[in-house]
Length: 407
Image (cartoon, rainbow, N blue to C red; front, side, top):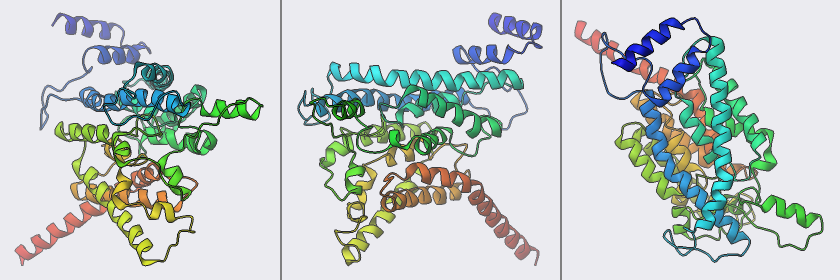
């Protein structure tokens, strides 16, 4: 009671100060939400926005730690300094040297993401006189996990500023945005700096710099850091075992490679009732349906091995769930409660289309063989429309039942 009493007196004394929202944000982060309900509510629960965001971060931490080890492992493997790991528990992977490289490269991405994003949120809160919401706590963690390991920090800072201002604050802040902020940031990076977001060199630390030295005349071997999707898009063999894909011991964005840890994170979100199992399941179904359609087209002979679409079309339909960012996007971004559909039937439709369109874009756009980002952003735009027609359909059914009773 002493802390609350003193806090109330302090806030009353400084209620006209512009810096008060910033103080409230720091207090909320360290202790508890600034405001709680006392009466007049229909449902009272123990959770709040801060606890919800912290739960999602807890689900992301294993992906972050794994991504650090994988960043170092892929770097040392490309240089030929270590052998191929034979499994998830192989000491060649869980090596402290790998973690050192990962920490050195990933932690700055996390710091820049949170520093720039929260800084802008504080500025807007002070200028507009509203509270700082906790929504960016998750966005700030998602952003470093969905970018290549060697993304320049200044580039990430520019993208975060764009995503927070254009993708979130202009709509009114947390809870008002129509697009997922993390994917807005990723989309800006892809379209503004495409050479840093695609290709076969950006996924392994040091590959770009090594190629620059080779071009300058240095006698060095080039590093091949091509992802599975990149190889398949060029009709080449993936070169990785199924279990490597499942465990995530492959090149890719920092936190998107381990389907195993993403699956565990998804189950945790479902258990805590933070993530929608309807969206996750329907998205998987949609991806499998699209994959089966493409496999059927290949089996029919309509697409030959000389076609530029053959590599991804001929991939076993279920393998699409293990490669690229599909699993990560489905679990952690398609389920965003702000930008996804709100109705139960709408969630089934929304999730199915996310999965269906993801694989469609993945196959038909060889220059960008990863469609989950664009699919989720597209469905973010249509989510309100889906909910509208679901609600209108329910209203019409009730009106018919009412008319039948009156008659």
